[in-house]
Amino acid sequence: WGGGEPLMNPDLFKMVRYCKDADIYTVVSTNATLLNQERSLRLLESGLDHLIIAFDGTTPEVYEKYRKGAKFEKVRANILRFLEIKQQQKSNLFVVLQMVRLPDNKHQVKDFQKMWKIDGVDEVRIKEDEIVIEGVALEERVNHDRKRHPCFLLWQGPATINYKGDFFPCCYTWQSEPYGNVRDTSVYDLWNSEKMQKIRQAHLSGDLSQYPDCRNCHAANPRMPVILGSFLVDFHKLRQWIPKMEKMAIFYKVPLFRDR
Image (tube, rainbow, N blue to C red; front, side, top):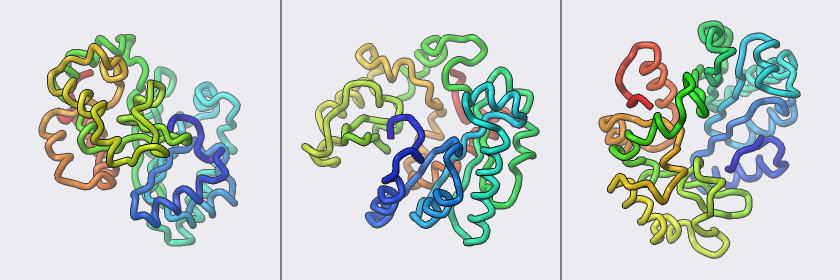
């Protein structure tokens, strides 16, 4: 992974199947602009476990403002066709319809949930903007809490390996210097390398001065019970639970996540 649209990669389906054959849980996130009938069939046949479909709005005006070059009705038709094929094949693929809450679509949250509460959709997720929330700078929001709570991803994973084989501690650090390459070193050795031990120690000590990606990270910052609980379940179950936890935190004001 490393940003971009996965359906642009012609080898995506082979890559998913390769992972499945190795008993690795697979997740793909797409904006569905390229999700035609052929790719829908191949995606379902690949054995994919978890699909996130990003669709940021319930009207053409709002959606096309954020998804430049995409057409609301065409992409919506792509998604509906995919869901129909999923139902026809009785696929167990876990599908999440996701909208990032942004200034021009935040009033559409309830409409979005209603719009995608249909057969084939397993979860409707409202995700907070990962850049700026209410005009507050990222570092101001997260720096204090990041010193107090180490990032559980550094222990539980998953790490990120891009198309070149470069290894990164997590998906939020993919633009920084890689920690090695899987073509030269095994994933096991990279995961337990000196660099990984140093970043873990930095999180434990609260000194992130040498790790700007962590200091300014926009990932969810869970409270300690959530962090501890995450180690009791396997990661693919956690991926399915996170949208439900976020929904509770946002709409029912359940304190699962610390203020950012």
